[in-house]
Length: 280
Image (cartoon, rainbow, N blue to C red; front, side, top):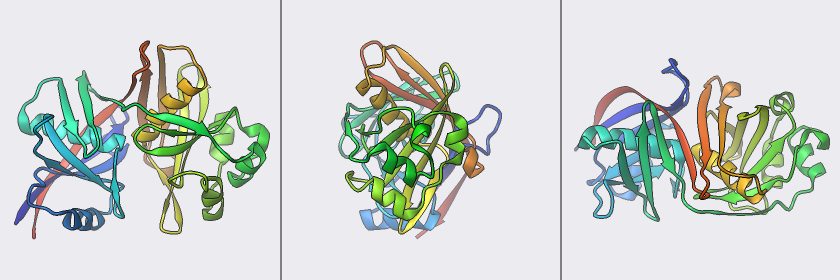
C-alpha cells in the first residue's frame, strides 16, 4: 500500500519558509484504520499529522493525530490540510472541511489561509493569581487579568501576562503544569502579553507524557484567545497580530479576528516544503 504525503509549515513568517509549526498531511486516508493513522503520526513524530478523507457534507473530511492521541480540533492542521485539499481538488478561495464532530469553513485571502472557529464557552480557573504566578515562575504582579478556561474545540487555560519581559521569563515544569490545570480537561496553558496596540506575543505549554513542551504556533489557542476577549467583554470588531514560537527557535505569525457578529477567525501562511510516499 503506497501512501502519499506532504510536509508543510503553517503560520510561517513572511519570507521565512522554515518557520511556523510543521505538519504532515496524508493525501488519502481511506485505506487506513485508526490504529494505523495513530502509528503513522507517531512515526513522523510531528505535533500533528492529518489524513484526508471523503465527505458527503463538505469539500473533504480529515482526522488529526498527535503522536499520542486524536485531536477533535486544531488550528494549524486545519489550515495546512485546507491548502492541500485546495491543491488536490482545484477548489476556489473557500472550502469546508469535516472533522468527526464539526465542519470548519476555511478561506484564502491573498497569502493567508483563514478558518472560522466553532462556537465555544469559558469558565474561571480555580487557581488564585498567587498560585498561578508561582507555577509559572512569575510574581502575581506579572499577571494582567483573569485566567480563564476556554473551549473552542479544545479546552485550554488562557492567561494574560503583564508585558513581554514577564512572558519571556515564564517557566513551567511538570508539577506546575499539572497543578494549575488540575481543574481542566487538558494540561495546556496559553500565555499572552501585549507588545503594542493590536500586537501580542504568546507562548503555549502542553504535556507529553511526563514532560512539558512548548508549541511554536497554536491555532486552537489563538481561537481560545478570541473566546477570552469575548468573555472579558472586549468590544468588537477586534484584530490581533500574534508572534509565537521565538523561545522554541520556530518563530511564527498568527492573526486573530473577531467580527461584529462575534465570529472568531484564525489566519496564517502555509508553506509546502516537500512531498513523498511510504509503502506499508
